[in-house]
Each structure stands twice: as structure tokens, then as C-alpha cells.
Image (cartoon, rainbow, N blue to C red; front, side, top):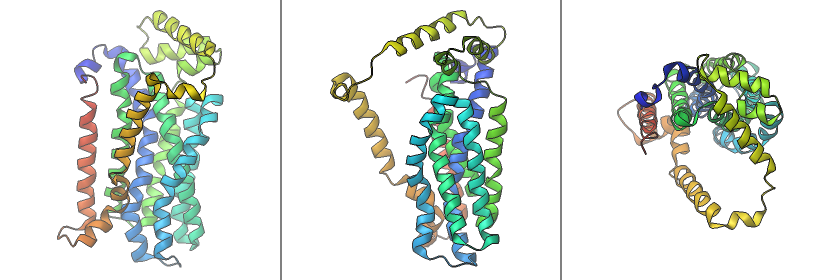
Length: 316
């Protein structure tokens, strides 16, 4: 894979940097998911305020529930203000969500924990499309598939990091530590360019040319690609609004059915339940291996499998 990607290093390295920083949104999403597995048992063992088992279950379930709303709400800011600006903006509530979760131990009130999980859940959903679209619009067609696969690996890495840290600290300390990662997203995106596609769609051709040149390297001739982006944008702007009946055409229904089917079976394997409750599951199973360390092993396996799938993207 890397031989394919690094065919022109001076052209690819700026795109790798953009993909790496853009993927940090998925890394932060992974930390939100990963907090529950070590965090819930730690909260149950060390709680100093009133919270019952049902409420702790809701604490674990809130991020995936709120993510649906977050994914819908981020659409307008991405279109109106840009993909880069959207990622910068969502990093601050991301940070605040973890911060509130940590402060719950000091304030001694479960409502603050719920608000923190609500915020982190909303940003969990918002970061997913924002990061994915930013990376795909920054990447050249030849390596777009490979760079887009960074997001899944970043998600798995975020889960693993939360597992590792959570094995050695209490739930509220874990929340404080994880709050630092959205600040890295904020800092990194400040130094990144906006996507050329978005800039062209908003009639900022000079800025789009500068952004494309930065993403392709100073020595790269970008004129042909820039004209192609303009032509594609012109075609998109001339297309009429899609009617609901057009979704029933075979050319649309088949790929839609395949993609929805993959997502359905991926989610209904119960992977999220495993991610959120791995420590508890191993403890209930009565394994001789400490549940915290078994959870870390699961995280490593998931990361290796996810990263390995990226090698199949260019050739399959």
C-alpha cells in the first residue's frame, strides 16, 4: 500500500498530514466510546454521589443516541462555514463535554455527568461526517481510498488509548485526560487549509488554488486538477434537486442497499455493546485475566484488524 501511496512523496506528504489531523476527529470519537468500558465499573466502585444502575446504563448509551442528532446538525455548519471551520468549532464542545464529566466528581451531582456525555455524544456524531468529508476533499483521487481508511484506524486507536489509560486511573481522571485530545484537534486544524472543493463551491477560486497548491506540494502543477474541480462543481450546481422517486431507480437502489446492508450487519453484530462494556463482560465471565487488561487486548486486536484493512483498499 505505502509504495502505491508514496509514489510522489513531495505531493503525498501534505495530504498525509491533512488526513492525519483530519482523522483526529475520529480519534476523539473513539475516546468517547472507549471511556465507558473502564469508566462505568470505576464509577460504580468509587461513586460518592447518588446514581443507580439504570442511570449508569444511560450514561453509557447517551453518546450513540446523541450521535444521530450531532451528525444531522453538523450539515449546515459544514456547508455554510466550511469543513475546516466545522472541525475547529466542534472541538471546543468536545473538550467541554469531557471536562464536565471530570468535574462531576468535584461537584458531586450526576446531572453534570449527563450533560458532559450529552455534549460528547453530539460531537461524537458531528465529527464523523466532518472528518470524513474533509479528508476525502483534500485527497487526490489516486490515494483517496487509502487516506479515507485512516479514519477507521484513528477510531480504533482512540478506543484503545481510552482502554489503556482507564486501566490505571479513576473514571473522572480518565475524563480529564481525554479532554486534552479535542484541544489537539483544535490546534491542528487551525494550521490546515480549507478544502479546495468547498472554496470553489463558494466562489473563492484564489483561495481554492492556494489550498490545492499547499495540499499537492509547491513543485506540483495543479492547473489540470484545479480545472477539473471547477468543472465538477459547475456540473453539480446545474443538477436539479433529486426527487424522492429517483431513489427507487436500480442505479441508486442497488448501491444504497449494499451500503446500508453493510452498515446494518456491522452494527447489529453487537460491537458497540462490546466496546462500551468490555471490562464488565470479562468480569462477569469469571476469566482469570483481569478484565481491564483483557479489554486492552481486545482494543489492540481491533486496531490491528482495522489498520490491516487499509492495505486492501488500493488493490481491491
